[in-house]
Picture 1 (cartoon, each protein chain N blue to C red):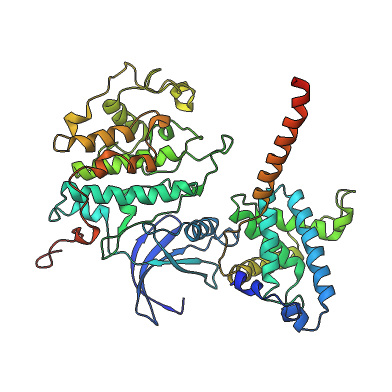
Picture 2 (picture 1 turned 90 degrees about the horizontal axis):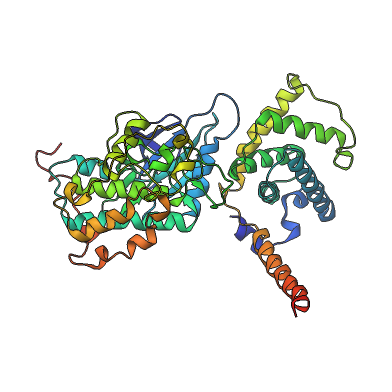
Length: 178
Length: 313
Protein backbone atom coordinates (compact mmCIF):
# COMPACT_ATOMS: atom_id res chain seq x y z
CA UNK A 1 0.00 0.00 0.00
CA UNK A 2 2.71 2.42 0.99
CA UNK A 3 4.78 2.50 -2.15
CA UNK A 4 1.65 3.11 -4.21
CA UNK A 5 0.49 5.77 -1.76
CA UNK A 6 3.74 7.65 -2.02
CA UNK A 7 4.05 7.51 -5.78
CA UNK A 8 1.69 10.39 -6.37
CA UNK A 9 2.61 12.23 -3.24
CA UNK A 10 0.47 15.25 -2.58
CA UNK A 11 0.85 17.15 0.70
CA UNK A 12 -2.74 18.33 0.64
CA UNK A 13 -3.90 14.74 0.69
CA UNK A 14 -2.24 13.96 4.02
CA UNK A 15 -4.90 13.07 6.61
CA UNK A 16 -3.64 15.70 9.05
CA UNK A 17 -3.67 18.44 6.40
CA UNK A 18 -7.13 17.38 5.32
CA UNK A 19 -8.22 17.65 8.93
CA UNK A 20 -7.08 21.28 9.02
CA UNK A 21 -3.41 21.22 9.97
CA UNK A 22 -1.00 23.28 7.86
CA UNK A 23 1.51 21.29 5.82
CA UNK A 24 4.31 23.07 7.64
CA UNK A 25 2.98 22.08 11.05
CA UNK A 26 2.62 18.50 9.80
CA UNK A 27 6.27 18.43 8.80
CA UNK A 28 7.39 19.91 12.12
CA UNK A 29 5.50 17.24 14.05
CA UNK A 30 7.04 14.49 11.96
CA UNK A 31 10.49 15.92 12.48
CA UNK A 32 10.04 16.35 16.22
CA UNK A 33 8.74 12.83 16.66
CA UNK A 34 11.64 11.38 14.68
CA UNK A 35 14.03 13.25 16.95
CA UNK A 36 12.19 11.62 19.83
CA UNK A 37 12.42 8.14 18.29
CA UNK A 38 16.11 8.64 17.60
CA UNK A 39 16.81 9.67 21.19
CA UNK A 40 14.57 6.97 22.71
CA UNK A 41 16.31 4.35 20.58
CA UNK A 42 19.67 5.56 21.83
CA UNK A 43 18.55 5.35 25.47
CA UNK A 44 17.05 1.88 24.90
CA UNK A 45 20.26 0.79 23.13
CA UNK A 46 18.37 -0.36 20.07
CA UNK A 47 20.30 -1.22 16.92
CA UNK A 48 20.27 1.63 14.39
CA UNK A 49 18.25 -0.41 11.95
CA UNK A 50 15.46 -0.77 14.52
CA UNK A 51 15.41 3.00 14.96
CA UNK A 52 15.21 3.57 11.25
CA UNK A 53 12.43 0.99 10.94
CA UNK A 54 10.48 2.62 13.78
CA UNK A 55 10.63 5.92 11.91
CA UNK A 56 9.40 4.32 8.70
CA UNK A 57 6.47 2.74 10.58
CA UNK A 58 5.69 6.10 12.16
CA UNK A 59 5.80 7.97 8.83
CA UNK A 60 3.64 5.39 7.14
CA UNK A 61 1.16 5.51 9.98
CA UNK A 62 0.60 9.25 9.55
CA UNK A 63 0.26 8.83 5.83
CA UNK A 64 -3.04 7.15 6.68
CA UNK A 65 -4.09 8.78 9.95
CA UNK A 66 -4.08 12.34 11.22
CA UNK A 67 -2.12 13.74 14.12
CA UNK A 68 -5.42 14.90 15.63
CA UNK A 69 -6.71 11.35 15.68
CA UNK A 70 -3.80 9.62 17.44
CA UNK A 71 -1.29 10.97 19.92
CA UNK A 72 2.07 11.16 18.18
CA UNK A 73 4.00 10.21 21.29
CA UNK A 74 2.04 7.01 21.76
CA UNK A 75 2.30 6.12 18.08
CA UNK A 76 6.05 6.67 18.30
CA UNK A 77 6.36 4.31 21.27
CA UNK A 78 4.18 1.71 19.53
CA UNK A 79 6.40 2.01 16.43
CA UNK A 80 9.52 1.51 18.55
CA UNK A 81 7.96 -1.53 20.24
CA UNK A 82 7.07 -3.06 16.90
CA UNK A 83 10.35 -2.18 15.20
CA UNK A 84 12.44 -3.63 18.02
CA UNK A 85 10.69 -6.97 17.56
CA UNK A 86 10.84 -6.81 13.79
CA UNK A 87 14.58 -6.18 13.77
CA UNK A 88 15.46 -9.07 16.10
CA UNK A 89 16.10 -6.84 19.11
CA UNK A 90 12.98 -7.15 21.28
CA UNK A 91 12.86 -5.09 24.46
CA UNK A 92 10.60 -5.49 27.45
CA UNK A 93 7.43 -3.48 27.04
CA UNK A 94 7.71 -2.01 30.53
CA UNK A 95 11.22 -0.83 29.83
CA UNK A 96 10.22 0.81 26.56
CA UNK A 97 7.22 2.56 28.10
CA UNK A 98 9.12 3.67 31.19
CA UNK A 99 12.14 5.04 29.31
CA UNK A 100 9.95 6.77 26.73
CA UNK A 101 7.73 8.41 29.35
CA UNK A 102 10.82 9.58 31.14
CA UNK A 103 12.29 11.00 27.95
CA UNK A 104 9.00 12.70 27.14
CA UNK A 105 8.86 14.49 30.50
CA UNK A 106 12.53 15.53 30.40
CA UNK A 107 12.29 16.65 26.81
CA UNK A 108 14.49 15.46 23.99
CA UNK A 109 16.82 18.45 24.10
CA UNK A 110 17.44 17.99 27.83
CA UNK A 111 18.03 14.27 27.62
CA UNK A 112 21.02 13.11 29.59
CA UNK A 113 21.35 16.43 31.44
CA UNK A 114 20.07 15.01 34.68
CA UNK A 115 17.35 12.71 35.87
CA UNK A 116 13.82 13.68 34.97
CA UNK A 117 10.82 12.78 37.06
CA UNK A 118 10.50 9.03 37.28
CA UNK A 119 7.08 7.60 36.47
CA UNK A 120 6.03 4.84 38.80
CA UNK A 121 5.45 1.68 36.70
CA UNK A 122 2.68 0.72 39.11
CA UNK A 123 0.77 3.97 38.70
CA UNK A 124 -2.54 4.19 36.96
CA UNK A 125 -1.21 6.62 34.36
CA UNK A 126 1.51 4.16 33.40
CA UNK A 127 -0.98 1.31 33.04
CA UNK A 128 -3.27 3.44 30.89
CA UNK A 129 -0.44 4.53 28.62
CA UNK A 130 0.73 0.96 28.29
CA UNK A 131 -2.69 -0.26 27.34
CA UNK A 132 -3.08 2.42 24.67
CA UNK A 133 0.37 1.67 23.29
CA UNK A 134 -0.45 -2.02 23.03
CA UNK A 135 -3.64 -1.18 21.17
CA UNK A 136 -1.75 1.22 18.88
CA UNK A 137 0.84 -1.42 18.11
CA UNK A 138 -1.88 -3.43 16.41
CA UNK A 139 -3.31 -0.35 14.71
CA UNK A 140 0.17 0.43 13.34
CA UNK A 141 0.55 -3.16 12.18
CA UNK A 142 -2.75 -3.00 10.31
CA UNK A 143 -2.03 0.44 8.90
CA UNK A 144 1.28 -0.63 7.44
CA UNK A 145 -0.48 -3.69 6.03
CA UNK A 146 1.84 -6.12 7.85
CA UNK A 147 4.64 -4.95 5.59
CA UNK A 148 7.50 -5.51 8.01
CA UNK A 149 10.44 -6.03 5.73
CA UNK A 150 11.86 -2.54 5.34
CA UNK A 151 14.82 -1.89 3.06
CA UNK A 152 16.90 0.99 4.31
CA UNK A 153 19.31 2.95 2.16
CA UNK A 154 22.01 2.98 4.84
CA UNK A 155 23.71 -0.28 3.98
CA UNK A 156 24.21 0.86 0.41
CA UNK A 157 25.57 4.17 1.63
CA UNK A 158 27.95 2.43 4.01
CA UNK A 159 29.21 0.28 1.16
CA UNK A 160 29.82 3.30 -1.03
CA UNK A 161 31.57 5.15 1.78
CA UNK A 162 33.75 2.11 2.49
CA UNK A 163 34.75 2.04 -1.16
CA UNK A 164 35.50 5.76 -1.14
CA UNK A 165 37.60 5.70 2.01
CA UNK A 166 39.37 2.63 0.73
CA UNK A 167 40.43 4.43 -2.45
CA UNK A 168 41.55 7.42 -0.45
CA UNK A 169 43.74 5.26 1.76
CA UNK A 170 45.35 3.84 -1.34
CA UNK A 171 46.02 7.32 -2.65
CA UNK A 172 47.46 8.27 0.68
CA UNK A 173 49.69 5.26 0.92
CA UNK A 174 51.03 5.31 -2.61
CA UNK A 175 53.30 8.38 -2.30
CA UNK A 176 54.85 6.88 0.82
CA UNK A 177 55.68 3.58 -0.74
CA UNK A 178 57.19 5.14 -3.85
CA UNK B 1 -11.26 -13.61 11.24
CA UNK B 2 -14.69 -12.84 9.87
CA UNK B 3 -13.47 -13.56 6.34
CA UNK B 4 -12.69 -17.17 7.17
CA UNK B 5 -14.59 -20.23 8.22
CA UNK B 6 -12.67 -22.52 10.53
CA UNK B 7 -13.23 -26.15 9.59
CA UNK B 8 -11.09 -28.18 11.93
CA UNK B 9 -8.01 -28.04 14.09
CA UNK B 10 -4.95 -29.52 12.44
CA UNK B 11 -2.39 -29.30 15.15
CA UNK B 12 -1.19 -27.62 18.26
CA UNK B 13 2.22 -26.26 19.05
CA UNK B 14 3.67 -24.65 22.12
CA UNK B 15 2.87 -21.15 20.94
CA UNK B 16 0.24 -21.68 18.32
CA UNK B 17 -2.64 -23.69 16.98
CA UNK B 18 -3.20 -24.52 13.34
CA UNK B 19 -6.55 -24.86 11.70
CA UNK B 20 -7.88 -25.79 8.33
CA UNK B 21 -10.11 -23.02 7.13
CA UNK B 22 -11.93 -21.67 4.14
CA UNK B 23 -12.01 -18.20 2.73
CA UNK B 24 -15.68 -17.24 2.77
CA UNK B 25 -15.74 -15.29 -0.51
CA UNK B 26 -13.72 -17.67 -2.63
CA UNK B 27 -14.20 -21.02 -0.86
CA UNK B 28 -10.44 -21.38 -1.13
CA UNK B 29 -8.94 -23.74 1.46
CA UNK B 30 -6.32 -22.27 3.72
CA UNK B 31 -4.22 -23.29 6.69
CA UNK B 32 -4.41 -20.85 9.58
CA UNK B 33 -1.99 -20.52 12.40
CA UNK B 34 -3.18 -18.66 15.45
CA UNK B 35 -0.46 -17.52 17.81
CA UNK B 36 -1.71 -17.64 21.35
CA UNK B 37 -2.20 -14.21 22.82
CA UNK B 38 0.58 -14.02 25.33
CA UNK B 39 -0.61 -13.37 28.80
CA UNK B 40 2.51 -11.48 29.86
CA UNK B 41 1.50 -8.49 27.71
CA UNK B 42 4.46 -7.94 25.50
CA UNK B 43 2.17 -6.96 22.68
CA UNK B 44 2.06 -8.64 19.30
CA UNK B 45 3.89 -11.96 19.33
CA UNK B 46 7.54 -11.64 18.39
CA UNK B 47 7.68 -15.01 16.68
CA UNK B 48 4.62 -14.19 14.59
CA UNK B 49 6.20 -10.94 13.40
CA UNK B 50 9.42 -12.74 12.58
CA UNK B 51 7.58 -15.31 10.49
CA UNK B 52 5.48 -12.71 8.65
CA UNK B 53 8.59 -10.73 7.83
CA UNK B 54 10.57 -13.73 6.61
CA UNK B 55 7.79 -15.21 4.50
CA UNK B 56 6.97 -11.96 2.75
CA UNK B 57 10.64 -11.52 2.01
CA UNK B 58 11.07 -15.12 0.85
CA UNK B 59 8.61 -15.52 -1.98
CA UNK B 60 9.53 -18.65 -3.89
CA UNK B 61 7.93 -21.52 -5.77
CA UNK B 62 8.93 -24.01 -3.10
CA UNK B 63 8.21 -21.96 -0.01
CA UNK B 64 4.79 -21.75 1.57
CA UNK B 65 2.93 -18.59 0.61
CA UNK B 66 1.43 -16.33 3.22
CA UNK B 67 -2.02 -15.39 1.96
CA UNK B 68 -3.02 -13.05 4.73
CA UNK B 69 -2.24 -12.05 8.28
CA UNK B 70 -4.22 -10.14 10.85
CA UNK B 71 -4.55 -9.50 14.55
CA UNK B 72 -7.68 -10.45 16.42
CA UNK B 73 -9.22 -8.19 19.09
CA UNK B 74 -7.83 -10.45 21.83
CA UNK B 75 -4.22 -9.72 20.76
CA UNK B 76 -3.66 -12.99 18.95
CA UNK B 77 -2.02 -12.89 15.53
CA UNK B 78 -3.30 -15.16 12.81
CA UNK B 79 -1.23 -16.17 9.81
CA UNK B 80 -3.08 -17.55 6.81
CA UNK B 81 -1.21 -19.84 4.41
CA UNK B 82 -2.09 -21.60 1.20
CA UNK B 83 -3.49 -25.03 1.97
CA UNK B 84 -1.31 -28.03 1.38
CA UNK B 85 -2.77 -31.49 1.10
CA UNK B 86 -0.09 -33.75 2.45
CA UNK B 87 3.40 -33.76 3.90
CA UNK B 88 6.47 -35.81 3.18
CA UNK B 89 6.04 -37.36 6.59
CA UNK B 90 2.64 -38.72 5.57
CA UNK B 91 4.00 -39.91 2.23
CA UNK B 92 6.89 -41.76 3.86
CA UNK B 93 4.62 -43.42 6.38
CA UNK B 94 2.08 -44.59 3.84
CA UNK B 95 3.41 -47.90 2.60
CA UNK B 96 0.92 -47.90 -0.29
CA UNK B 97 2.83 -45.05 -1.90
CA UNK B 98 5.80 -46.30 -3.89
CA UNK B 99 8.93 -44.14 -3.91
CA UNK B 100 11.15 -44.81 -6.91
CA UNK B 101 14.66 -43.42 -7.42
CA UNK B 102 13.42 -40.71 -9.82
CA UNK B 103 10.71 -39.77 -7.25
CA UNK B 104 13.35 -39.38 -4.55
CA UNK B 105 15.40 -37.24 -6.91
CA UNK B 106 12.45 -34.88 -7.40
CA UNK B 107 11.64 -34.66 -3.68
CA UNK B 108 15.19 -33.83 -2.67
CA UNK B 109 15.59 -31.46 -5.63
CA UNK B 110 12.60 -29.39 -4.54
CA UNK B 111 13.92 -29.30 -0.99
CA UNK B 112 17.32 -28.12 -2.19
CA UNK B 113 15.72 -25.43 -4.34
CA UNK B 114 13.80 -24.16 -1.31
CA UNK B 115 16.95 -24.30 0.79
CA UNK B 116 18.98 -22.45 -1.80
CA UNK B 117 16.35 -19.69 -1.86
CA UNK B 118 16.48 -19.36 1.93
CA UNK B 119 20.24 -19.36 2.20
CA UNK B 120 20.68 -16.97 -0.67
CA UNK B 121 18.54 -14.50 1.29
CA UNK B 122 20.54 -15.28 4.41
CA UNK B 123 17.73 -17.07 6.17
CA UNK B 124 18.38 -20.07 8.37
CA UNK B 125 15.40 -22.41 8.56
CA UNK B 126 16.47 -24.45 11.60
CA UNK B 127 13.58 -26.88 11.64
CA UNK B 128 13.84 -28.96 8.51
CA UNK B 129 12.08 -32.29 8.73
CA UNK B 130 9.60 -34.28 6.61
CA UNK B 131 6.67 -32.80 8.54
CA UNK B 132 7.56 -29.35 7.30
CA UNK B 133 7.65 -30.37 3.64
CA UNK B 134 4.15 -29.85 2.32
CA UNK B 135 2.73 -30.76 -1.06
CA UNK B 136 0.12 -29.00 -3.17
CA UNK B 137 -2.18 -31.10 -5.30
CA UNK B 138 0.01 -30.58 -8.36
CA UNK B 139 2.98 -32.12 -6.58
CA UNK B 140 4.79 -28.87 -5.79
CA UNK B 141 6.66 -29.14 -2.54
CA UNK B 142 6.23 -26.16 -0.23
CA UNK B 143 8.57 -25.69 2.68
CA UNK B 144 6.92 -24.36 5.81
CA UNK B 145 7.58 -24.29 9.54
CA UNK B 146 9.42 -21.00 9.69
CA UNK B 147 8.72 -20.67 13.42
CA UNK B 148 12.37 -20.94 14.31
CA UNK B 149 13.80 -19.43 11.16
CA UNK B 150 15.79 -16.24 11.35
CA UNK B 151 17.95 -13.91 9.36
CA UNK B 152 21.60 -14.67 9.70
CA UNK B 153 24.20 -12.26 8.42
CA UNK B 154 27.00 -14.75 8.96
CA UNK B 155 28.81 -12.41 11.33
CA UNK B 156 30.72 -14.47 13.90
CA UNK B 157 29.49 -12.43 16.87
CA UNK B 158 25.82 -13.29 16.31
CA UNK B 159 24.90 -15.98 18.80
CA UNK B 160 22.36 -18.57 17.72
CA UNK B 161 20.34 -20.73 20.04
CA UNK B 162 21.30 -24.42 20.15
CA UNK B 163 17.65 -25.15 20.99
CA UNK B 164 16.57 -25.15 17.35
CA UNK B 165 16.13 -28.23 15.09
CA UNK B 166 14.19 -31.44 15.63
CA UNK B 167 16.35 -34.09 17.32
CA UNK B 168 16.81 -36.56 14.46
CA UNK B 169 17.70 -33.75 12.06
CA UNK B 170 19.96 -31.86 14.41
CA UNK B 171 23.51 -31.35 13.16
CA UNK B 172 26.44 -32.49 15.32
CA UNK B 173 27.79 -28.97 15.89
CA UNK B 174 24.42 -27.85 17.29
CA UNK B 175 24.22 -30.98 19.44
CA UNK B 176 27.60 -29.96 20.77
CA UNK B 177 26.04 -26.61 21.72
CA UNK B 178 27.70 -24.45 19.14
CA UNK B 179 26.21 -20.97 19.01
CA UNK B 180 28.02 -20.10 15.82
CA UNK B 181 26.48 -22.55 13.42
CA UNK B 182 25.43 -21.40 9.99
CA UNK B 183 23.71 -22.42 6.76
CA UNK B 184 25.61 -25.70 6.76
CA UNK B 185 23.52 -26.70 9.80
CA UNK B 186 20.39 -26.73 7.63
CA UNK B 187 22.28 -28.83 5.09
CA UNK B 188 22.82 -31.56 7.68
CA UNK B 189 19.03 -31.78 8.06
CA UNK B 190 18.71 -31.92 4.26
CA UNK B 191 21.14 -34.85 4.26
CA UNK B 192 19.10 -36.62 6.94
CA UNK B 193 15.92 -36.17 4.88
CA UNK B 194 17.68 -37.45 1.76
CA UNK B 195 18.80 -40.53 3.69
CA UNK B 196 15.29 -40.96 5.04
CA UNK B 197 13.85 -40.88 1.52
CA UNK B 198 16.14 -43.74 0.54
CA UNK B 199 15.72 -45.81 3.70
CA UNK B 200 12.06 -44.95 4.18
CA UNK B 201 12.66 -44.51 7.86
CA UNK B 202 14.49 -41.80 9.79
CA UNK B 203 18.21 -42.32 9.37
CA UNK B 204 19.64 -41.27 12.73
CA UNK B 205 17.12 -42.01 15.45
CA UNK B 206 18.48 -40.92 18.77
CA UNK B 207 16.39 -41.76 21.78
CA UNK B 208 15.03 -38.62 23.39
CA UNK B 209 18.33 -37.11 24.47
CA UNK B 210 20.88 -35.09 22.58
CA UNK B 211 23.67 -37.32 23.81
CA UNK B 212 22.00 -40.38 22.39
CA UNK B 213 21.61 -38.49 19.09
CA UNK B 214 25.32 -37.61 19.09
CA UNK B 215 26.11 -41.23 19.83
CA UNK B 216 24.06 -42.35 16.81
CA UNK B 217 25.88 -39.85 14.59
CA UNK B 218 29.34 -40.86 15.81
CA UNK B 219 28.56 -44.56 15.35
CA UNK B 220 28.03 -43.91 11.64
CA UNK B 221 30.42 -41.05 10.93
CA UNK B 222 33.07 -41.84 13.49
CA UNK B 223 34.08 -39.76 16.50
CA UNK B 224 35.40 -36.31 15.68
CA UNK B 225 39.14 -35.87 15.57
CA UNK B 226 41.77 -33.48 14.26
CA UNK B 227 41.53 -34.77 10.73
CA UNK B 228 37.79 -35.17 10.13
CA UNK B 229 36.75 -32.05 12.03
CA UNK B 230 39.63 -29.75 13.00
CA UNK B 231 37.42 -27.23 14.82
CA UNK B 232 35.43 -29.63 16.96
CA UNK B 233 37.63 -29.17 20.02
CA UNK B 234 36.49 -25.58 20.53
CA UNK B 235 32.80 -26.54 20.76
CA UNK B 236 31.29 -26.14 24.24
CA UNK B 237 30.48 -29.81 24.74
CA UNK B 238 33.87 -31.02 23.58
CA UNK B 239 35.41 -29.25 26.57
CA UNK B 240 33.46 -31.42 28.91
CA UNK B 241 34.77 -34.55 27.24
CA UNK B 242 31.35 -35.99 26.59
CA UNK B 243 32.62 -37.26 23.29
CA UNK B 244 32.57 -41.00 23.74
CA UNK B 245 35.95 -42.49 24.26
CA UNK B 246 37.20 -44.83 22.80
CA UNK B 247 37.25 -43.40 19.31
CA UNK B 248 35.04 -45.05 16.73
CA UNK B 249 35.85 -45.14 13.03
CA UNK B 250 33.35 -44.14 10.37
CA UNK B 251 31.15 -46.78 8.75
CA UNK B 252 30.86 -46.85 4.99
CA UNK B 253 27.53 -45.43 3.86
CA UNK B 254 27.48 -47.87 0.92
CA UNK B 255 26.83 -50.63 3.42
CA UNK B 256 23.80 -48.83 4.84
CA UNK B 257 22.24 -47.65 1.59
CA UNK B 258 22.56 -50.88 -0.33
CA UNK B 259 19.70 -50.14 -2.70
CA UNK B 260 20.75 -46.60 -3.57
CA UNK B 261 22.56 -45.72 -6.81
CA UNK B 262 26.20 -44.65 -6.56
CA UNK B 263 25.65 -41.03 -7.53
CA UNK B 264 23.01 -40.67 -4.78
CA UNK B 265 25.43 -42.02 -2.19
CA UNK B 266 28.14 -39.74 -3.47
CA UNK B 267 25.85 -36.72 -3.00
CA UNK B 268 24.77 -37.91 0.44
CA UNK B 269 28.40 -38.35 1.48
CA UNK B 270 29.17 -34.77 0.47
CA UNK B 271 26.25 -33.39 2.48
CA UNK B 272 26.42 -35.49 5.62
CA UNK B 273 29.91 -34.51 6.74
CA UNK B 274 30.77 -34.00 10.40
CA UNK B 275 32.77 -30.85 9.78
CA UNK B 276 30.21 -28.15 8.85
CA UNK B 277 32.73 -26.31 6.71
CA UNK B 278 33.06 -29.34 4.41
CA UNK B 279 29.36 -29.84 3.71
CA UNK B 280 28.06 -28.95 0.29
CA UNK B 281 25.93 -25.81 0.10
CA UNK B 282 22.45 -26.07 -1.39
CA UNK B 283 23.54 -24.54 -4.69
CA UNK B 284 26.59 -26.82 -4.90
CA UNK B 285 24.40 -29.83 -4.19
CA UNK B 286 22.04 -28.84 -7.01
CA UNK B 287 24.98 -28.92 -9.41
CA UNK B 288 25.97 -32.43 -8.33
CA UNK B 289 26.02 -34.98 -11.21
CA UNK B 290 23.24 -36.91 -9.40
CA UNK B 291 20.73 -34.42 -10.78
CA UNK B 292 22.00 -34.48 -14.37
CA UNK B 293 22.57 -38.24 -14.50
CA UNK B 294 19.91 -40.68 -15.69
CA UNK B 295 17.18 -41.24 -14.68
CA UNK B 296 15.79 -37.71 -14.66
CA UNK B 297 13.64 -36.72 -11.68
CA UNK B 298 9.96 -37.64 -11.95
CA UNK B 299 7.96 -34.64 -13.19
CA UNK B 300 6.33 -33.24 -10.04
CA UNK B 301 2.84 -33.69 -11.51
CA UNK B 302 3.47 -37.45 -11.66
CA UNK B 303 4.52 -37.84 -8.05
CA UNK B 304 2.17 -40.05 -6.10
CA UNK B 305 1.07 -38.14 -3.03
CA UNK B 306 -1.67 -40.30 -1.56
CA UNK B 307 -2.71 -43.90 -1.72
CA UNK B 308 -5.20 -44.94 -4.43
CA UNK B 309 -8.72 -43.84 -3.44
CA UNK B 310 -10.56 -47.16 -2.77
CA UNK B 311 -10.14 -48.66 0.69
CA UNK B 312 -7.60 -46.01 1.53
CA UNK B 313 -7.51 -44.50 4.96
